[in-house]
Image (cartoon, rainbow, N blue to C red):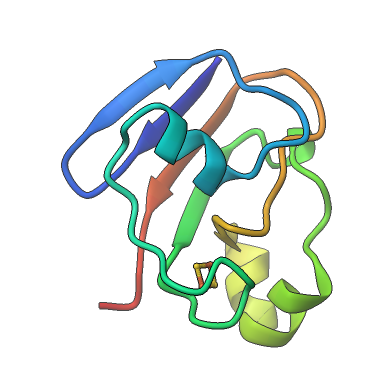
Length: 97
Ligand code: FES
């Protein structure tokens, strides 16, 4: 199960491998901010609180855009982080502002 918490909307559904957190938020009508969809604006930033192991490793764009401390804390870019395998994943939308 995947729990996504947007600005106001929160939904739970079965995660689909190969899709990004942003893809899934849009598909399930969770209110997620984004702009570039290429890993540069960070409008889609979010905090993974459970199931990081079920997501693919950070992309080069995430490594460039996020500080090492943010990655350590579980922050990812929604447009970059893809589901790798089914499992319990919980993510909250957490932009800088
Ligand atoms: S939408 Fe711009 S970094 Fe994800």
